[in-house]
Amino acid sequence: MVSILYAQVRDAGPTHGYDMEGYLRPKAHPANISTVYLGDIAKTLLKVIQGHSTPTMVEKPGFDEQKWAFKCRSGDVVLNVESYSYWGFGLFTKCYANTITLEGPLEERSRIIFDLVASLPHKPWEFSRRGKFNSKIGNCQENDQRWIEHIKRAKSDLNELIEVTLLEKGDSEDIEIARNALADDNAPAVLRALARIEADSIDIEVDEVAPDGITLKIDENEIPFVDLSEEEE
Image (tube, rainbow, N blue to C red; front, side):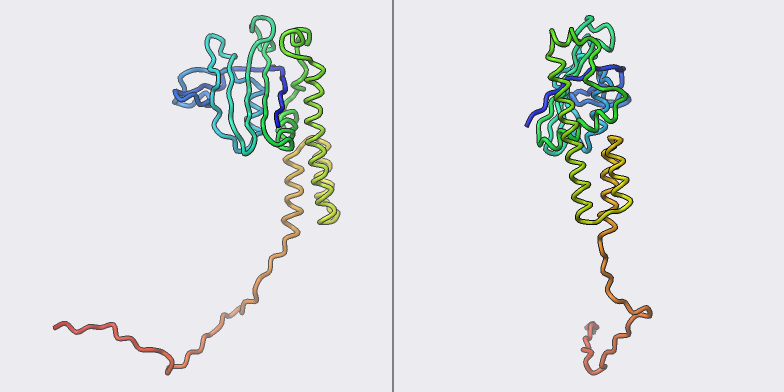
């Protein structure tokens, strides 16, 4: 029920802040009282997780604005992200790592990790200083394997969805589009192609309607008369 993965931060800046209640906000938000250097990993995570709650700061940054932790929820998944330096006294952005903790169904956890990796220009498990990471945080090889296992699971789930759609709806151009999108690690495009197939297969039954309308015939003797007038005394 829990995934714990470590990621190398490669880019960070004063893109966010937090308000009096501890909610993480974009930099321009008027309620911000302090700055948060969120970093590329956390920013991308918040973009790929659909419909998440407003992140709450679990650990607010102090003198080191890049050392922080926040959490949020999206459906059945709870996300926790922690930022910290693991070498070089935090003098450079590449000194920092993030610990990503996901709680919830494995299928959803794997999909989030798949979308994160597909949206980043680099592999997040490739650390700048593997020796320092091994000595201070965890084992690089085990961390590499956890990332890869999540990606494989997400691809397997999406491929299964494609094959089920193929069996139920038959072959089509969108099936090929979905397969090509999966090969490109583009999960949203896979789901869009499958959604088109589902929409095309829905038969809409329209009741017969007379083009000129229908005239309703009423017998005058069957119309009740109601006197709504009252005489004033």
